[in-house]
Image (cartoon, rainbow, N blue to C red; front, side):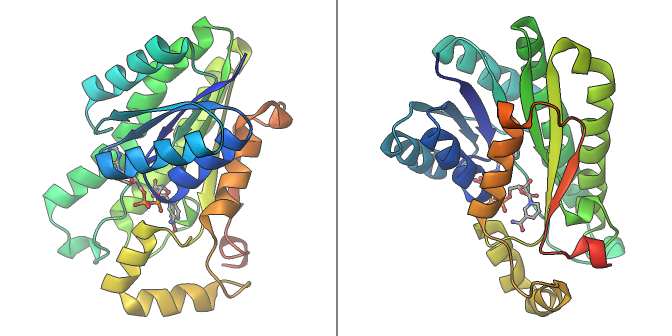
Length: 249
Ligand SMILES: NC(=O)c1ccc[n+]([C@@H]2O[C@H](COP(=O)([O-])OP(=O)(O)OC[C@H]3O[C@@H](n4cnc5c(N)ncnc54)[C@H](O)[C@@H]3O)[C@@H](O)[C@H]2O)c1
């Protein structure tokens, strides 16, 4: 039987690259995104790679929309084996005391509540069906402190806690939960962020020992490894993929 995955934020960047990589391994995928255009583009790419895909439009910060994407995936494909819990936004990048409350709520709502809701409903299905594998997207800013991204960093540190603590409760039920912590990676989100904050791009690349940004395909390779049975005894890990950035801070 073909495996089944849900990829949130699947319409762009890390989500899209991971969907394509999973499709190359014959995994059928629910692509979840707020963006219909991006989501449908990824559905086409998955089908070109030889797997089946559906697009489910959802705002992950709304619990009822999360429940709906989980229910619709089970209706379409019967189960959920893999979950890439990845949708997120960076915020506008200013200092914390210049950030308005609406933006703080929005970043926490999507990056942290969205991830918590996703696991809440997906893990229920996985455990009922004998187990499954989840990869949450943290960030360099989830393992070290950084200026200009205080709210974002708080949510990505939250992802680390979510990852480790779920393992304490549900590894015995067949659940594996890991996280990836990418450094700056050349996705549309990062391009937009650096266009608005050019000085930060210079600082970021200069501070990376390998002197380049990561690529979505490199992160997709790691996520695919962690999701599948190749990583069967890896649980509760947060794996940095950042050209040496956070380890040399
Ligand atoms: N690119 C990087 O450098 C980098 C580094 C570390 C962590 N991350 C994290 O990786 C994840 C993916 O980022 P990316 O760089 O691929 O960005 P991206 O902007 O290219 O893709 C993110 C996708 O998420 C979708 N999305 C945004 N808000 C949503 C919502 N409320 N509900 C559903 N979908 C929503 C967007 O429409 C988009 O398609 C994010 O969690 C981000 O924080 C990215």
